[in-house]
Length: 154
Picture (cartoon, rainbow, N blue to C red):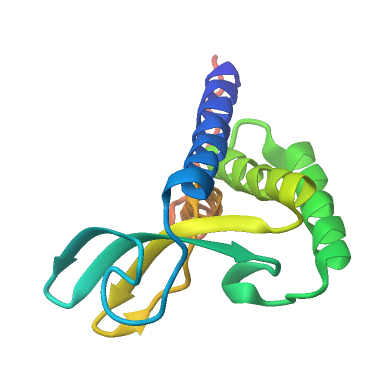
């Protein structure tokens, strides 16, 4: 359990630090061509990655924008429910880490800070952050990886 806590604090710290850096040093998204007014990371075979500062007052892909109170209550409920069930399941720790990172944004700024921007052959993927990555990786791990069985000592 302790190693999950270290990873939790490391990822949460990384999320907070990258969002502070994004606010101070990454230009805002501008529609147009790569790197969309931001900082270009790479462009290869129709796939591009850039850093572009945007704010998101909704959930994933901007859903429920304008319903900040409802989203805050929902996020807090999910966090409390997951903490109750987390125990030693690493994917759940990832989801909790991401949810807390985005709740911290909401409490401090009234919106979530996003800055990682990919495009795939002209399709602009929704801009995201480290917290969103934790949530996505955690959920995909829960869905795709087999549940480990507990081994009891004889």
